[in-house]
Length: 285
Ligand SMILES: Cc1cc2nc3c(=O)[nH]c(=O)nc-3n(C[C@H](O)[C@H](O)[C@H](O)COP(=O)(O)OP(=O)(O)OC[C@H]3O[C@@H](n4cnc5c(N)ncnc54)[C@H](O)[C@@H]3O)c2cc1C
Image (cartoon, rainbow, N blue to C red; front, side, top):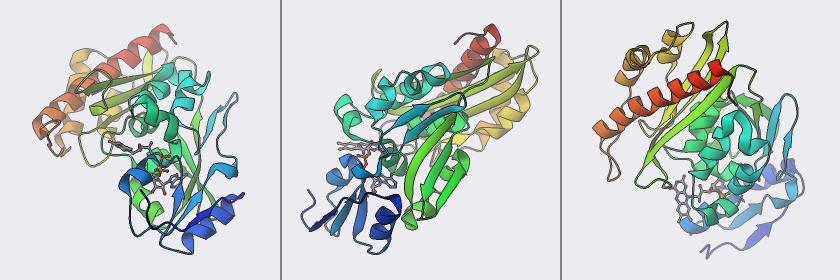
């Protein structure tokens, strides 16, 4: 419950929404409200409902898919283009964020703002070369890696996420997502995503990220460098993962010890890389 909220704004422009939040520290953006209502912060005095900003659309064209910040997680999964993009990994990751009821309520923007260390959507967007459009109130566009790195700064500046863009994967490329949770459909304890583009029979582009093995989802850049241009085998992938895994510092909790998380990060990253590689070189969508 938000017992002390006295004012409810419903602006019609992005600029107005940002100004309203930035002018009062006790005012907050209201996406789907799933997290805000569950938190019940007693210091909140006003909310800025984002429903009238026209940010609930998904649009696809030859270049990619644009998803407004107010698109719900379930809309993303059900959308014929977004849900199936990149071998369906975007829809698959969204299906692991929350239960069905919360996916109907929770929005893309709200989810990316409160995303935890093992957030599947953040992990998948990291390998899909996504971009985040935000307003502070000026319009900006950030590569997804920068968004993750500077998310706390954006939250402090009370910037508004406007849209997420995912480029359409090129021919001869494929993505894969792997996850381990307490049950087959539970939120991830650890997850991994990979994207591989093949040229002349070899990986010309390799991206791999893991969630749940550090403070936030992270790209394994060293592994990507080591695997580029090599014929991938399980042994080569395992060896290339070692230097990147060696610098991860997972925190253990009741869902998984630090050792378990590190072990799973390696297992899932290897599976995701090999699956993406097989699909890409066989031209499977
Ligand atoms: C029982 C329960 C369990 C949950 N468990 C988890 C969990 O384990 N992990 C997890 O990550 N989340 C969890 N959540 C949180 C929540 O369900 C999801 O993260 C949800 O998808 C948030 O989306 P929302 O649109 O409802 O966000 P809201 O609740 O509307 O907003 C969340 C935050 O994001 C900000 N915000 C919203 N939209 C934007 C925007 N476009 N630009 C900038 N800021 C914005 C809000 O101001 C707020 O600070 C849980 C919620 C509930 C009720």
